[in-house]
Length: 330
Figure 1 (cartoon, rainbow, N blue to C red):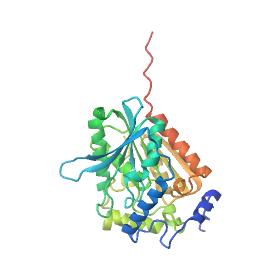
Figure 2: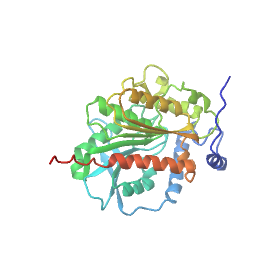
Figure 3: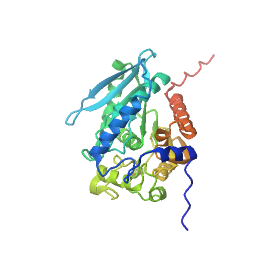
Figure 4: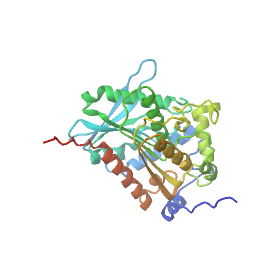
């Protein structure tokens, strides 16, 4: 007998009802160029609702690399915070086919000021123009650049964490695997907000979430087709393209995962958390009842969204703080 689907949280349901959702959902991947323009326009509207944070500078930097295009990053740096500063490397959402680094700058500046940390938002290359693992390679390049240039930038190379949202959460996870496998210094943490991890689309939540209209099964299938082409769902996919493909998760950084109960990514997130823990990685996992994908963005004033923000902000604050020195023996 099919399981009944839990009800959407009442505040989130009201926000969903107020949205203009087309026949292909909020994010129409049948026309990626048009949807990219719509996302850019929406980002400008949202930016106008968030007060500017004048204490944080924003610098666009082109990170060079041999034999490949530069990686654009946006460096946010609080003016008066004492250095060297810890760093959050941020990967924006958009299913790896939509979005851009500056879309999150207004609230990332506020986060930077509140936590006294720098933020490096990576403008990674998008699919289908750049198939996976191109985006993770961009993340790895940016991470190594931070380590190599930290002193000149007033940053602490020993306190660099990875964080990402949705498609960007998947890229953060893949970047962490590249960092580990290439022998670079382990990040301080990886914070994954409802991450996009598995191209196979075989979990229960992948099959069940088909009609909410935010990021449902059909949209996810189109996104992975853009990211991987004919490789999607086959054995010809590496962990650097879809992090759930990794069988060895040992040696990865402490991990935060938050996901909604009605998110197409629910089960792949829960599975990844369980396997990380089985490989000895500290994991903090949060499952939000009645919540659909990106609920904190579509219903930002809801109690669930406020709880989620408080939880992951607290995680960042705890992990970005340098551990106190051991007391000297008397």
